[in-house]
Amino acid sequence: MEEMCPLFEEFCAIIGCDPNAPLVKHEVKIGYVRSFENLFQFSRPQARAMIVGDQKAILLPLIDEFSEVHSDDLDRMRLRMRALVFCLLAGFLFNKDLGFGDLRLCPMIRQMEDMGCIGGIVLAETIRSLDRAALGFDD
Image (cartoon, helix red, strand yellow):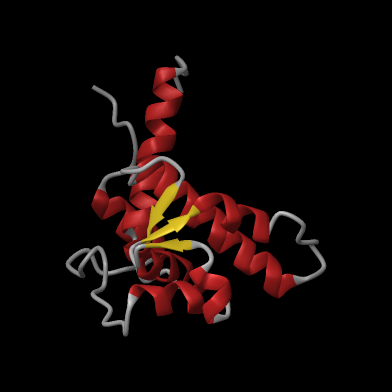
């Protein structure tokens, strides 16, 4: 039987990380709301307008916030990429409530961006390979 994606050890060799290191680094934060604010550089009122119950972000205003970003504004493009990754993780991988994203994903987004977390890469490659298999690709 052929492999669907590289093995964990192969991922570690490719990106040059320690296979015995934790998949997700524990990160002590003041709160998930503050983490959300920092991740997207929102003011407190701006972040609060997108948050329900101190635990969930409403995805649609987050998408709208970065939908008009132009490619010449590199800082805003970086924030847009974070927002897209957050929505992808919240909407497809950790989907508990449609249209909402759990704020506990915020530290994972930062770790993925800093290459401090290979869990996201493993998830992305697994999903990509399963999608290709479902569509009937042989290679």
